[in-house]
Image 1: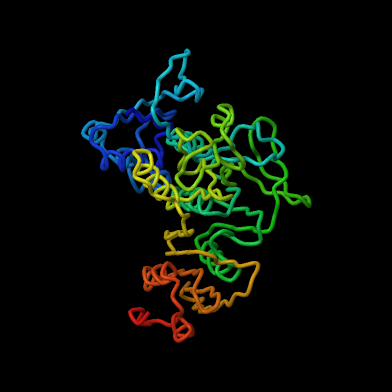
Image 2 (image 1 turned 90 degrees about the vertical axis):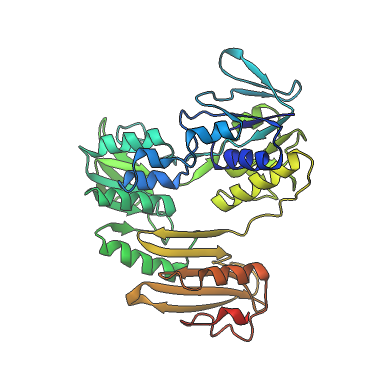
Length: 400
C-alpha cells in the first residue's frame, strides 16, 4: 500500500513517523512545498533571537528519513488532488498515484485587510525564508511594531528586542494572549513585558500602514498614529483548504473530517491545522500530534477514534512560564472561578470549576503544580474538598 502525504509540517511528519512504527512495509511518500526538512515552527523564534543556529532548527537529521524509509520530496508542492483516479498532480502535469492520501498542508499567516499592505517592510513569520528576510530588513530598520498580542506576536517582539530593536506591540482585543489568559492574568503579563522596554497597547484596531513605498508607521481607528519603519503581522492563521475544496472535498472553516480523520472521500484523510473536527479548528500543536497519531492507525485499518484535544499550552512567554489548559474564559453555564495572585513576583493561578470539577486552569509565573493540575483536568475528578487549597503554594496534589 502506498500512502501519500501532502505537507511536511508537524502533522505530516508525525503521521509518517507513527505509521512507520506501526508498519515496516507500507510505502510513505511526503510531498512538500518547503525546500527544507521539517522544523518545529517555535524554533523560528529561537533562531530570530540568536538562541539556536540554523543547523539546530530541524527536528530530525537528514539521514533519519532514509533510515525510516520515508521518502521526502522537497520543493514539490501538490497542485491538484484527483480523487476519481486516486492521484495527485505536481508541476508540469506530473502525477503520482496513492492508495491512501493524507492532507497535512497546515495553515497560512493571515493579514487582515488593512490599508497599505502592499508597502515594503511588512512581514509575517511562517517559514525559515521569512526569518531570513526579517533579519535582513531589521539591520537597517530597527523601529518595529508587532501587530498581534498572541503567542507568536509576543515571542517575535521579545526576539527582536533581544537584537536591540525598538519594539512595540498592538493588540485588537482588550488583553494580551486572549485565548490563553483572562484580563487579570494578562495585566500581570503586560506589566512584565513593559518592564522589558516593550510598549504595549491593547483594545486598539489598526487601520492603515503609513508611508509612500516603505512603511513609516501605523494609523489606528480613531486617528492615533505610531511611527515605525518595519511591521510584523501576527494576527492569526487560516487553514489551507483551497487544495481540498478544488478536489470537491467537504470544507467549512477547515477541511471537514470525521472521528477517524477521514474526509468526505474515505480514502483521503486530514490532520493538523488544516482540518475541522466536530465544528472545531484547533490550530495547536497538541491537536496536530493527536490527529496525526490517530490517522496513522486508521489508515492501516487499526481503528482509533480521535475524540478531540483539550486545549493546552505550556510555554515560556517573554521569559514567563505559562500553562493554560481547558476552558479558561467561560462565557455560558454555571462556573466558579478561583484565583491566587502574587503580582510582584509575576505569579497568577486560576482554576475554573463546573460542579466542583476543574475544567480549566491558568498557571503563570511558576512551574510547580503544572503537571498535577493538567492531570486533574483530564481525570475530571471532583475537588470539592480541596478547591480552596489547590491554589496555595505547597499543596499536596497526591491526595486527588
